[in-house]
Length: 395
Ligand SMILES: Cc1ncc(COP(=O)(O)O)c(C=O)c1O
Image (cartoon, rainbow, N blue to C red):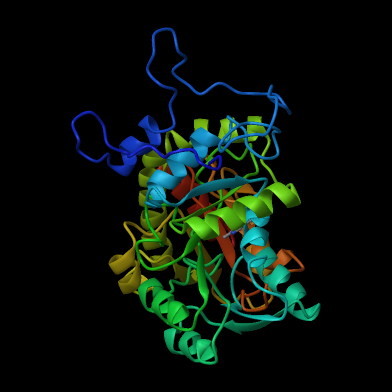
């Protein structure tokens, strides 16, 4: 969002508010004037014609505002329900967006954050703490009492991720957000695994929602991008200023690609979520599998919370094999897979599998043998057949 640019209302001529499935397709389009393009144009210019003092919303330099980010930001803001005072901002990557939110913490300020979450976010939080720039208390975000007690002395930021990567833990977002606000903290939620179609943290009490747009939002494993969204005009201004002065801006082409991918988000979320739930159900019954984590499963600790605050359970699941203390069985299973691609990341059209502890910065709370599966758009029967032959091949 360029400073001062109004957001669309998300309502068509009928006055009926658009559903999210319509918003992803219909919002962020150029005005319907004769001969106008249907898609927002890609604007490749680092500077814009102007003379004198720039007014509000005026384009000057492409680090401050860029026509190629704005349609994407409009769609994200509408999906997150930021309202007219708030908005969304695209960043160069998910980590650039995470960094911008962590930079809201004053020097020496207190942060409460998950000990088990996306590895690089945890790494950055540990760095901030080690460098004395913030005092971070790490908690189990699924344990609301632990979150509340960590907040007891007051805090500047409550950082949440839900569901968490890769343990799929579900935080009680309304309860944690209320506790965070009560402690005087800005409440931020990394909602990457859910997307705004499945979970809307702002409506559940958060101040800021953060996304790795790289994942499901873009959806094709061809772009790195991040975003923040907030209903709070003052926070939006601070985050926008941070982006401008630190320079973690998205490239116009990346933003254009992300919007192109976002147009099919509703279909992809529905299909990949259904595939993940079906595979989780089948995997749970396989004798070689010791544990499956996916909030769709009634056996999952996050099941009831997910039902209360999410519309679906997402397209990522994790599994551990029976007797796999050191991860050797998981590594061998990955080698036997033919359709699932062994690769990091998630949320693309192709199904990916990864043993997360292969990364040196993966939190030790992730079991050595945990495999994270990101379900893509392939036929669920083909995905299952590949998993089943790999599971049976190790018997
Ligand atoms: C939950 C979560 N948050 C943030 C990030 C960082 O996003 P990016 O890789 O776009 O910087 C990731 C990346 O995997 C993630 O899974």
